[in-house]
Image (cartoon, rainbow, N blue to C red; front, top):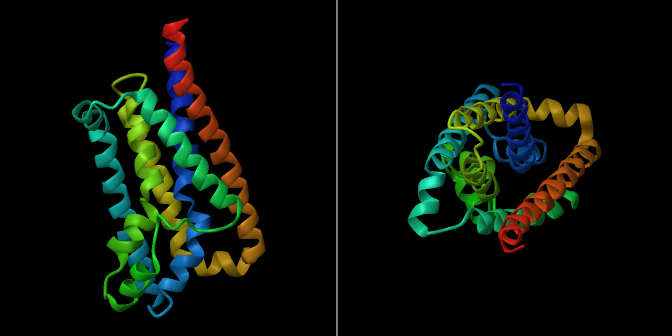
Length: 215
């Protein structure tokens, strides 16, 4: 029982840290503030709420369907681990450079969002919050569930992370004014470093899983 609790706790921490660093709410806050500057404070709060909810639904769906997607396309966990690690490593390097990845939003999407009355679903919910990295992470984590009830652990992790995202985004203008751009870039670089470590571990796990049966 103690081993199961320890295993589930470790899995919960892995889910929490991976999703938080990949979604990177600190890094996307300045972009959200710029995109919603023409809206009132109440409208910005609603956009943050709807965007977070959209991301939550998206990530939950991919977490549930992740294993079925593996089986349907004949993808091995090891291959996805290595591919996911490479993707995470790439995102981590960008975060160390204090840049928002291009995979999250494009200039065309930003222009469209400024002309739209409702930008919460896209591009804020998808792909700004629930970007390719976060979606890949939920699929990968769902394939690594130690127990069947570990899906609830993934769901709880997603809910906690997106709750933080919502709180940070709705107070983005305050956060920037208090911390300043330099401090936010430092925090983003630290999260990028954590993501790089997670990426390397994913790649190691995938390679070890492939080599072990051959030894």
